Amino acid sequence: MPERAQAPAAFGSRLTAAIAERGRLCAGIDPHPALLEAWGLNDDVAGLEYFALTALEAFAPVAAALKPQVALFERHGSRGLAVLESLLAHARQADVLTIADAKRGDIGSTMAAYADAWLGEQSPLAADAVTLSPYLGYESLRPALDLAAQTGRGIFVLGLTSNPEGASVQHVGDDRSVARRIIEAAGADNRHEAPEGLGHVGLVIGATVGNALERLDIDLAAAQAPILAPGFGAQGATAADLRSTFGSAWSQLLPTSSRGLLSAGPHLGALRAAAEKSRDELA
Ligand SMILES: O=c1ccn([C@@H]2O[C@H](COP(=O)(O)O)[C@@H](O)[C@H]2O)c(=O)[nH]1
Image (cartoon, rainbow, N blue to C red; front, side, top):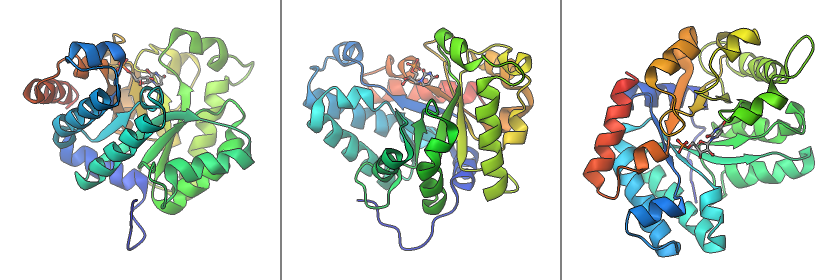
């Protein structure tokens, strides 16, 4: 279980320091069955554990953060979640930030339990940040927003997702789109907690969204939000796409790639080289 002797620095500062030290890449740990097979592993708990810990060892020195995809651990049941707990503990020892990609969201009373699970000091599943879905309303996330602020952890709220179907919900709205409302709400929280620099309320904005930010009149700089940008790599977005999509918000950006890196495995050297190449493209 995580133990902390004194109040930790705020998540935005910790992420800024990690990017300065290790570069801007977030390395995804997505143990897909097809990747386990490609690595010569069985699709079982032993294969999962080998995969996750090898990826951690390869990526931790060259990534600002690691993002395990929770669903791919959950599909192995309670023993899969135990592997995730072990991965998170090893990441703490390696001093690399973790973002649990769990996409949780529920009414406030249940949200408090999700917050305890992913952000609570005593939880074996506690990560440095967790992804959340605001579909029940941004304010329903309040227990997690508050606990993250108290514990020096962060959250990443889905804003504009990388999948093409996301637009049918997120782009909707007469004067202000759903995405813009979520992003403005995150910005209000960040300005309240941290008048300068990155706040603890991050946003997920896909690397694949093209000119949606411009079309929806969204000001990411004003939100002071760390931006987790999936879609880099296997979903087709390049470093050049990231630059044209995010422009002046570049300093907030944490591009994340999973299959694009993991398909270089199983050898640690090849995995490390793939991550270094992506990190350098983002430098
Ligand atoms: O909008 C979103 C939100 C989350 N994801 C997650 O990121 C990774 C992407 O994996 P790749 O292999 O690099 O495509 C995966 O865990 C998704 O669940 C996303 O892709 N888009």
